[in-house]
Every structure is written in structure tokens, then in C-alpha cells.
Length: 151
Image (cartoon, rainbow, N blue to C red; front, side, top):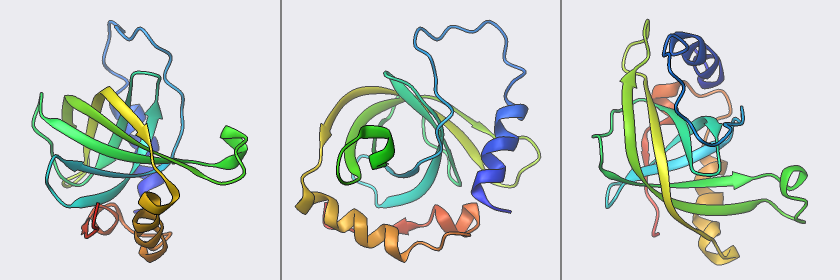
């Protein structure tokens, strides 16, 4: 099963939560994301939604609540109006981690952003390499496997 279809299924599976408490609008945006717990190897996954203060990811391994997390998003030029894709490294805290119902080992991770910085072209080069190695129709398990980088 492709990661994108799991993201769509996740949205309906988690829609049973009542009492919306978000202060910022979440945008239904599906971007590849590199994520890791601080000091861990990078894994590749996908966003389910993004807001000004956080994001929601789908991945094949759980993250502990209140732990620090790093993630790198690549925003396409048609969204940013920049001449090239824009890579941003975010730092955050895990707010929620829940297994997707009806799945084997797929988790939804909610993260609150604490800081961010734009990557230079040189810093983004290692992520370019990882992105090129990634298969476009990889399964969520294969897509979230650790990848090595010098960053």
C-alpha cells in the first residue's frame, strides 16, 4: 500500500477525535519529510497536514511523547514562488503518537514546532541525494527506513 493512501486513510481513522483545540489552521499538504529523534538516523515519510505551529506525519515507527524531533520539509517552487525548492529544517516536540487503526506498524505523529531554519544549498545537497534514492511508489515501511547523511 502506498504512503499517500495511508495518509488519506489515517485522516478518516483519526477523525473520531472531538473537541478541536488547534489554534492554527492545518493545511492538507502532502510533502516528503525527513524526520528523526535527535541524534537518530534520518527516516523518510510524508506529512498529512501542516500548520504555522506544527505538523502531522505518518511513519512506520513510534516516537515518544514530549521528545525532541527534527524534520526537514521541502516546499515546492509553485507554493513558495522561489526559483527552486526551499528546504527548511524544523525542531519540535512530539505531542501525540498513535497507531493507525487497521494498519500494521503505521503511526500518526503530531509535532509542535519550536524552531526552524532555512537550509543552505550545500546543507540541502545530502537531502537531495536521499530523495533521489527514494522510490516514488515505496511502501510506508520501505519509505521510512533510516537513511544515512552527514547532517
